[in-house]
Every structure is written in structure tokens, then in C-alpha cells.
Image: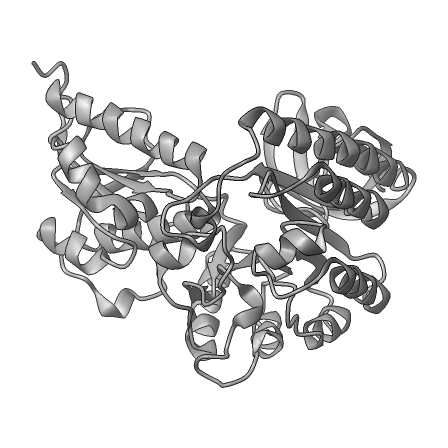
Length: 438
């Protein structure tokens, strides 16, 4: 029995997973709004008649979170608290047939490229003139900026090509139009994302064109930071680093998932690079852009990973001293190349190895942060939390990296969405503390 009145034309969009999914939800929300729907993102009011869940299907934990969320809203529908439940995104793309059988309460499932069909189901039109328009779910001063869809890489562990398809670059002219629109709305920071940023342009321009794109974006008035996420190490386009040096609004920051530090495991992963070549690339990047912040991601417990292989990765991390690092435990994914192999590292051992890497990285991060004490940095402030204004330097991305905390008492000139020069007075493992540098 219904306990509250539902707003018939209200849609609650729930997003799970990565920044690419956030981008997709924002595009979907703009289309819904243009069709006169009242749209909210992850509303706490629970008064929407329609819920659309944008799912993640990347690894086991993400899949489970998506399934739990679907079941939660399917139960809400059964109780009369929601009229319609629709599911889209990666999990739906990959397991649509199974999900339809297991959770019949869901009204319809859609894949990653089914937005026009989803809108049609809602009796809405896909408005081509809105291509690139989004309803931002992030603070108004920064936005994730997807430059390509899909991936052509053959990585053995990854199901992304299954869910997202082949790599398709968005033309530079279209991206410039989108970026100008965002800048006009007050966006100051663009975080460039794709499954593989460095492959950009090969399909439409027959050459790696990321540097050309960055130049065009950096010319747009109002864009003060451009940040690069998800670069692939093999075939890395070094001319990108030239642009980083030339343009003051291109952050000295690079997110480059390396996945492992053992040549044997990298070859098994089909990464197209060795540990030795990886170290050479890291050294070249640091030599070319002094002071650059390098973020990477690793995987612990890939099939066949021995104690010696793990030690090689541990030593690699210890030598490399990455500014930022995250690590996943290996997830055995159906229809990937690695699924043919026995998942022979226990869950307990995977976690132990991941924890060892993160303990090592915590110490590295602490040491690197201490070097920042006494220096002044340009900081973009994102939010207020408790007694602190919280922001980031050019070396940090939202959600995943270090933050700068400034006590409200000391922050007369700090405004959210604006930059301030901050003198770092102390630091711990993952946060910096400072005062306005007057």
C-alpha cells in the first residue's frame, strides 16, 4: 500500500560506478529535463514515480552493489513506493537476460548505448540538438569530460570492451562546443576521461590526437584546469607532456593505470609493456614535466601471481614513489581472456597483498606530503565539511586524491568554486592543512 504521493513526472536517477557513468547519467538527465520531466540525482525524498538505475558491471564488488540497488528499488515498487523501475548501464549491458529472469519487477533493462530507446519507453524524444548538454551532478565548478567511448585494448582481465564496445572518439569540434557550454555555466575544471585517453583520435584522425584536443580545450576562456585521467602506458603520446609544459591551465597531473609491476604478469595481462619499459616511461615523464603528480592503479592476485611476482610489484612501487596509488583485488570475469585461467590466488591472499601495497603507499604519501609543508599552492575549493573548507591542488582529483583543509576561522577570502593561494602548515598521510597565504 502506498504511504506517500508520488510525483508522476518525477525521475530519480541513481548512478553507480565510475566517472564515465556519472557523465552518462548527466547526459540522460538533460534529455529527460528537455522532455519536461522533473529530474533529480540520487534524491533522498523517495517521491519519484520513476527510478532509473545506471549500473556498474566492472568487478565483483561493483556488480553486487548494482544488484543490491536494483533489488532495493524492485522491492520499493512491490510496496507501491515507486511506479516504474528501469535499469541501464554496464551491468545491464552485460547480464540483461539473466537480470530479466532474476528480477522481473524491473520494467525494462537497457544497455550502455540505449539512451534513445530508454527515452522512447518513457514516451520522450531523443533531442539531437542537445547532444553534449548535461545536468551536472558534481559541484558547478568542475565536470567530468568524456572524450571517447569504448576500448580497443586486449587486456586479459577487463570486461569493459564487452560492456562498452569498440573505441569511438568524439570529434574535437564537438568537444570544444561542449567545453564552451560548460565554461559558460561556470565550470572551471575539466577532467578528461575515457576508457583509454591516449588512444584518442586514432579511429577518426588516424593518429593520436590527445595533444591537439588539449590545446583546443586550453584556449577556452574560463577553463582554468584540465586534468588527464586513464592514460594507457603502451604507446603513450609524449607530445601531451609538451602541452602540459606549455599551457598553464593543463594540470601537472597524470592518471595512468599500470596494473602490475611484474613483467611476467604484465605479459599475462596482455598490457603490451614490460616492467622495465614502464619504469623507463615513468622516468621520462618525470624528466619532461618536473613536479608532475602521477596516479596509478594496480591489481593484486591475478591468476598465476606468485609471491615472487608480488614482491616484484612491491619493489616497483617502493622505487617508483607514486604520488597517488590505488589497488584492486583481481576479479575473475566471465568472457574475458583471463577467465580461461584458474583463479588460483585466494581471496585472503589477494586482500593481504593489496593491504601491503597500500601500507607501503601510505608511508610514501606521508613523506611526499611533508615536503609540501611551508610551500604555497593554488587551491580550488569544493565544499565545506565541519569546521573546514576543503579543496584541492592541481595535483589532486576529486574523490580519489589528497585534499587541502583550511579552518573556517582562517578563511575570510575562501569561496567555494574559487581558487585561493594556501600556505601548507602541516600534513598527514592523505591530507594537507593550511591557511590563506596573504
